[in-house]
Length: 459
Image (cartoon, rainbow, N blue to C red; front, side, top):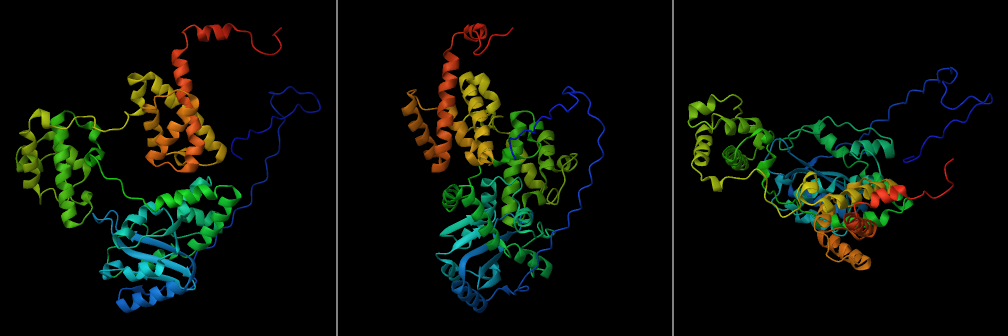
C-alpha cells in the first residue's frame, strides 16, 4: 500500500541487537508462474465495413434500438497523413453489436449522430478521438473516459490493453497500432484489431465506474467528463520551436532559417496530406539552418540534408534560406519564445525568489495531497494553472479573501470544482508562507535553533 513502511523486526529471543547480521535463512520458495491471461476475441465475429448509405441506415437503426452506453473509437493515420481525420469509426452497444464505419465513404454522418443522441459515449483517451470525431459531425451529449478514470483511480498504467488485462483479465493484441489507416481496402487483421478496441469497453466502463464509487471519486470523474465535452485541440503557437535538435542551433539568423524551413515543410505536408517528417526530417532542417547554403548544389551537398523531398523541393528550400539571409536582424526570431505565461520554473529563483519559494512549497504540498488521494499530481491540478496562479498571485493577503481570490483564478483558468476544493487552500497557504518567510528577519533561523526543544531535556 502506498506510503506504508515495512515494520522493523524486533530482537529475537536471544536478545540480539537490531542491526546485527541475521542468521542464514533458507531461500524462499519460488512463486508459482502466473498463467497468461486469455486472449480477447470477438464474440460476434468480424462485422462488414459500413460504406454505403443502406448499410449506414441499418447500423443507425440497430444502435438506436440498443440499450445502455455506446463504446466508440476512431482510427487515424498518424505518422502517415498530415490531417488528423478519422479513417475508421468503431462502435458497440448492447443489443446492437459492433459496427465498423468508414467515414471516408460519406459526405455526412448526421444519421449516426442522430442515432447516438442522448447516449453516453465510452471512449479511451477521449482527447485523442474527440477532435477527429467532431470533424465528421459526431459529438457526445455525455461521455465516460476509461483512461482518465483509470488515472483518477491511481492505476500506474492506463493504456487500454493494460486496463483490460488488469481489470477484466483479458490480454489484447496490439500489433496493428501504428498502421496506415488511410489504406483502402483495410486488411481483415487490421479490422479485427479495430473491432477489439470496443469489444469490452462497456464492461470496462462498468467495472471502473464501480471503483470510482467505492473510492468516492465518482463526482470528480463526472466533472472531468463534463469538462471533456468542450475539449478542443490547443492552437499551436511557435510550433517550429519544437523542431528536434533546435538547441544545437546558434544565432538568430539560423533560428530564422529553422522557422522558414519548418513552415515551408508544414505547408508542403498539408498540401500533400502527408506527415511533415516524410518530406524532410527535423535533422535535415537543422543541418540546412546551421550551414545556411546559398545555392541548390551547396544545399544538396550539406551533410545531413536528406529526405524524400530534399531534392524535389530544393529550389524552394533555397528560396526560403535566401529570404532569411536578407532579413533585418530585428525581424529574426529571438531565442526565447514570446508568451504571456510565467517563465520556466528553473528561472524563478533568479527572477523572483519569493515566487520560487511559493512554487516549491506548493509542489511539496500538492505531491503529498496527490499521494494521499491516490492519483497523479497533474490530475489534481493542471500544472500550468498552478504556475500561473503562483507567479502572479492575487494582491490580498487576508487569508479568507486570498482563498476566495485563488479559487476564482483557478476557476477562470478552467479548473473543476473538485480540484479547486482541494488545491485552493494549498496554494493559499504556499503564498502566505512564502511571504512570511521572506519577511522574517535574518536572525530568525538562528534564534529558532537556540530555542529549547519541546519535551524532556537531553541528558
